[in-house]
Each structure stands twice: as structure tokens, then as C-alpha cells.
Image 1 (cartoon, one colour):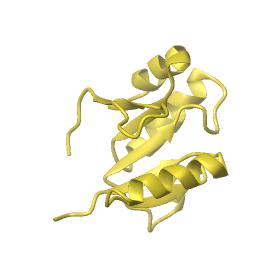
Image 2: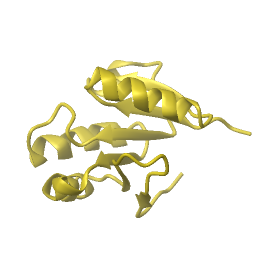
Image 3: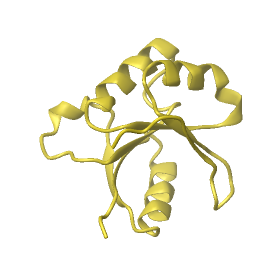
Length: 117
């Protein structure tokens, strides 16, 4: 069985550690990105990018650009909360293929709209 490689783009050390632990425990291979463009790291390989919409960006335009950059590496899923609808829409406009609802549940809801692997 193929291990799914996830690039996690998250700037909070506490949340990043918790997510990494949770996802690794489900058999996923996790690499953490510092938000730099992915082509700056020749060894970075991924099947999917999980990008927190509150990470490294403060507006929709910057988020769209970051998603376009990471989309060159792999399909991008956004990690979001209900109160970030404007940023979520900007992320989908920028090319994200779906989103994961960030909540306290151990079973997050994942919405994927279009994924070509």
C-alpha cells in the first residue's frame, strides 16, 4: 500500500505538532513547510498539500498566490474554520481543490471538489 505524502503548511508550532501527530498516527507521511515556495526545496515531494488558511497570509490575494505556488507541487486542501468564509472562497478561487474543516472533532469533515491525481 502506498503511503500518502502530505506537506503541512502551518505556522503555529503547537497546532503543527498536534496535526503532525494526528496525521502520522493515521499512516500519513508528513513534511512541514515553512511557507517558502515549494520549488526552493528540491527534495519536497507530496501527494497533497494541507495549507492552513490563517498561515503566513493576511489577505485573499496573498493566499491565492501561495496556493498557486503549492499547486505546482500537489493538489492543495485548505484547513479552515467556519468563521473564515472569505479566505476560504479566495483559496478556492486560487486553485485549492477542497478543504478540511478545522474543529475539535477527531473525525474532521473533508470536502474535495475536484482532484486529478
